[in-house]
Length: 172
Image (cartoon, rainbow, N blue to C red; front, side):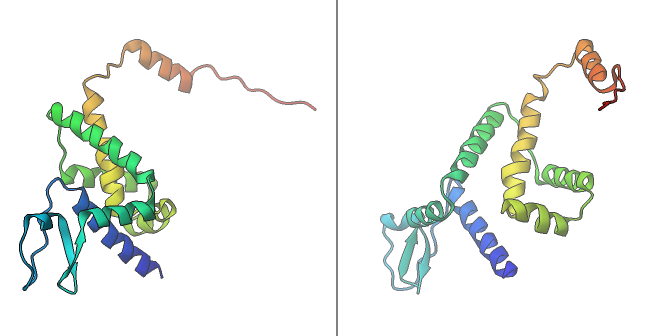
């Protein structure tokens, strides 16, 4: 059962990635189907002649997964646009490094992370990388130059963690 769910999520993730791309190449036309400009929004064919359009696929995904993912997409796009304006980009190696750092801090291997942590959030590893890690890294790079830590900030943080401690007891 879990394998079927994973495969479904993997296929869904790939379909969502294809739909989300700015330009999707139309599916190759099967033999015997005329080529007209209205078919440029077709992403697949069933039985080589029945088209599935981007609109149908999008409606299908929205109906099943609701609009909770829409907020994620909007936020992700805003972050990407602002980073593009600032000339900020990241590589897959940076995402891998962040993922490995997270795995180390949680003291788990990748399989355990996918099964236990991502399973709890109903996310695939692809979704985690693209919807969580990528925006985190982009935001960190975007605000890095704007954050200035002063001596006063350091002193306040030190006092908050290591300041005066008082031992108390409750007598009943």
